[in-house]
Image (cartoon, rainbow, N blue to C red; front, top):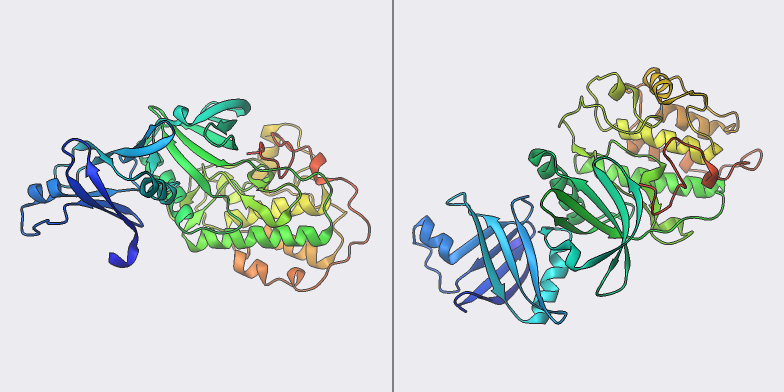
Length: 390
């Protein structure tokens, strides 16, 4: 486990002021006595060496401040030996604790969200999810905050496992979660505030976007994760008008490959037909969703343009009754698109998509894209690449 060691420092037990050594590993926090006798019983060992699983929904950390200076932290965790919930407070040098917190951000659950963030405005309000703008009180930095109700502890553990793994295995086209908080009945994700794009897309820009998104999805699938809700709302720009800062966000429906792969979820118009038909499915459902996005970027039109209401849209989506826009006349574009939205048996992986001829040579469109992407009228979709479009 030493090869996974990330950070170490000295701390003291706030109750008895005894010195302890803190070791931060990729997935665990170990706090022990430097003179620990390894021949002790499990109970005595636990009293001297606390091994804390960071990625558990039963582990939380509350930071202790005095006049904006960090003084210590209180950790609550499940003891590996007694299987009971325990809490203990440690104090340390402010600079060392600041370094520790930076390393723990996005890797463990924090508490006391309202002590650090001030509400600014609401963006999206749903039954179990609220997306809002908040200001970090210490820095004045604007953040996007997603609050989701905790309805299922096993689902919570699954969601946290995915978020923590993605933060551990960072990738340029996947938006990192800055911090994760746990309230009594909510899980809170704090993210960077992302900007919107104000002008239409050129074909080379579309190619760049798709390449970045496919590489991001390839990274997810390599980690054994299916997003299951890729759509324009879940694509944002971290910096205004900068396509290099494009990010995939919102992993609320994400699962590990093989886990609950018959559950219907996603957004109509982007959902792979096998999901709606309650068939077994795999990571290639994300390729279908990217195909729907690809169609929108190429034409400025939705993949199912003639639906009458939500149920009709689901019916068309279920049968894969797509209507590819006549604006997509380039052979390479159209070929790749049809592969991505085709039957699951013939749908290519992200790796194969990236090897397609579309990405190997320049594409010339016969006429300009008439509709700006920012003017799309998707169900429940506002402006693509906006911070508030989740």
